[in-house]
Image (cartoon, rainbow, N blue to C red; front, top):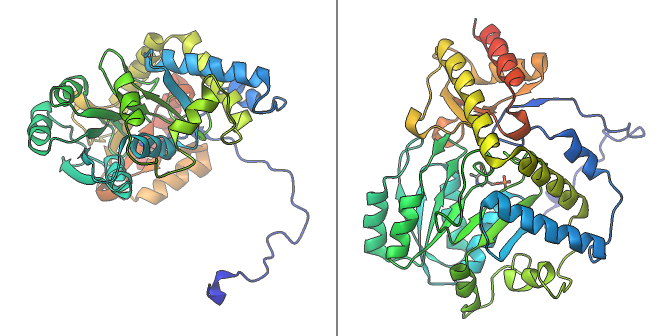
Length: 383
Ligand code: PLP
């Protein structure tokens, strides 16, 4: 290792560190979203051991609540310790073996990430592309699947980098016609728009806790259909990742409770509470709330002269990606929103960097008062 791998003594910690006191923000970016006080309170509850019968009961409860929110009866449904990307890796490392053919539909940054992860699994990866902001037509997916005959097709339901809402039901049917598994990214969609894992016959799905579930980042709910579980059982090779190997993890979450790694106890408390809030509100009511507040936001943004990146038929209510008007500086506006109103919105990613803003309306952040606050702050900034 070179000498530059060390750092000179710092003056940052010369005095005793003061108690941590982060600012209160209104989180209206692409995630994380605001967290309900009940979820924050759950983080401060006394720790249990990761094999304590009470914690084991809480794991069972979160598995069942996760099934309800994914709308599935899949046995292999649990929360991976890690963020949404760990969910993506869990799906791919467990279902893909070296040499397997994988097809990824890429219309934004997160489809691109799936390509990267699948190729690190040693897969023969093929991709089809749509410009950022657009969605895939089932027939173009059919053409690619018929030609490549992949073992698995990966697609993003809610592309957070563009705000595009990809319909997936027909695509799942096509995958099964050709005997391919379908893996769905629901990091931004779960609990914000309908996600119907069993009705759509999705084989593998992952999500993250920090978007429409309104929990801090740190866990990745995943679920695998019986077909996908069989594919894991039929593997010829060991799963490449020890940490994300479901053949071991399912023994900790399932009957045997064999220690695998120390579960992040407090995050599981928070996740349990966030799921309870979703179930208390009701999924349909939650989807309707996101749709209703999105309509108010959309009308307001368009009245300010802002134009959406996505077609209205495929725009996510929880992620509003709008072009920055000509002559307006991206960073100046975002800094003003943060410093003067405490509002966080997101900048553009990939080809939309510096050209678009991403305004989130996710979970607990999705409130009419937030919409009104943001519209009035933005109007002042654009004046
Ligand atoms: N997939 C999508 C659609 C996302 O929006 C994100 C994060 O924003 C991820 C995957 C990765 O999740 P994380 O950043 O929690 O690792």
